[in-house]
Image (cartoon, rainbow, N blue to C red; front, side, top):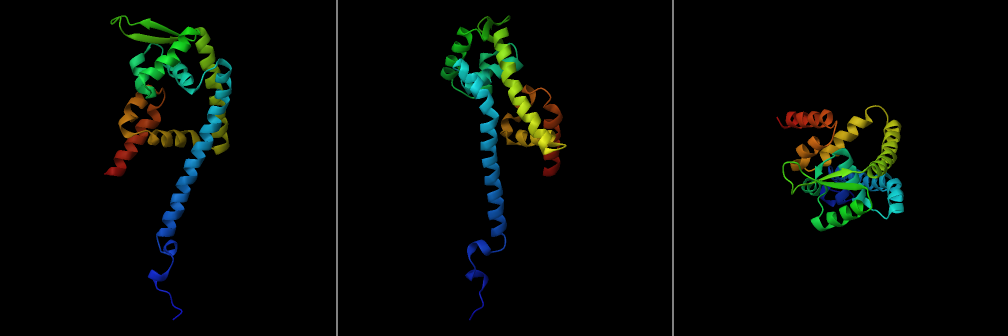
Length: 189
């Protein structure tokens, strides 16, 4: 009467369920690692932005305009996925304080093209250098190949419908994005 059948075993002890529970825990740990990594990744920049009365939306605008001089406001809205109202507030502050300049398009005068001023470029570079330093240090600690694996992982985290646009937007992403796409296609066949 002491023998237990599989149906008498606790659910977590059934074959496969322990693996699923362990897999779920590993994934939750990864979610938590992303939370902590993002917290620390943004912390240095947040402290600098605070000195100007700016937040993360200001940082993203400065970053993408710096990387894409002449970026259209409509394209920036699409990149940031924020409302026109939110972007208008952030842009007004950046323009009023001399970090961003807005120019009319050459072929379409209604287009608003964004450029950083020298003041804006200095701040964008300062913020980027803080984050580049943290990433470089993490790659060094993680060991050889960490940069490629990390880029492929982050690219895979982007929604499939946005990957091509992101790949076009980010300089140097082609080496990882194209490789990732080829591997995905190979795995599906």
